[in-house]
Length: 162
Image 1 (tube, rainbow, N blue to C red):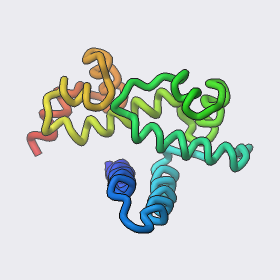
Image 2 (tube, rainbow, N blue to C red; image 1 turned 90 degrees about the horizontal axis):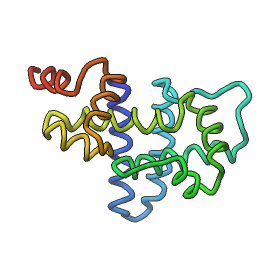
Image 3 (cartoon, one colour; image 1 turned 135 degrees about the vertical axis):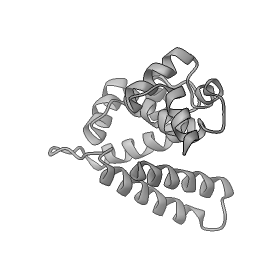
Image 4 (cartoon, one colour; image 1 turned 180 degrees about the vertical axis):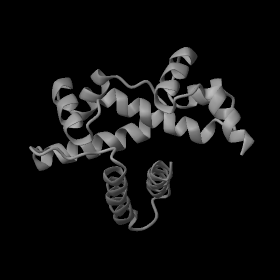
């Protein structure tokens, strides 16, 4: 999907920018965050509800999305997110759903599957699953099928044929 490709490309640029930390990289990073949110809105991954929360809520979601992108390959729980963000799990879930129309866990899983799709042609399915934060291969296969409508092996065969 070209929209997801744009999102992943922007995330890669964000990570590159923060990793390289060239002079004035902060400005580039801020610009890339705006670009990321533009792509997320255009693709329908984020929807602003009619009764949007305060600016604090927007910043909370932005910070959470950045944190997820940096830690997607690790074990992520709502309790950990709550601790890192300094808000209750209930608040995190409510504000995230309000801005993205998704649960935090759905977003994490969808993000991991998108990253898996980018790697699955190069690595084994098992390695891809572990690299993308899934510790259980059968759970990875179940979630992959939920989001892509096919098993990881079917997907891999498809992309290798191209």
